Image (cartoon, rainbow, N blue to C red):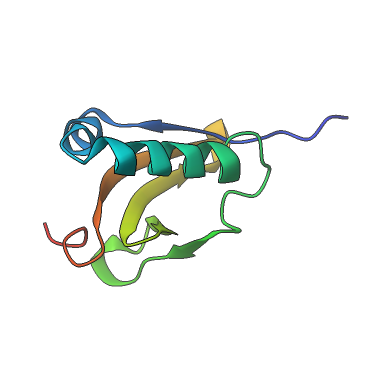
Length: 92
């Protein structure tokens, strides 16, 4: 039996925020997600669970940027909900 693998996508609000980032940063983040999430069976290997109110979400570190995601195991989906600089991404 072939192992199942995850894929990633971005929610509408996150995509709008993402479009405001520098093009080089956008390419770096997309390349990282493609290399580390797309096609792999363990989406948690490169991330870290958040704590507190954001405890259901995971973060991935891409240089000075963070990708905040909701991992949906039932659909094998990593849904990106926010992307931004390290000091700003956790603000509401």
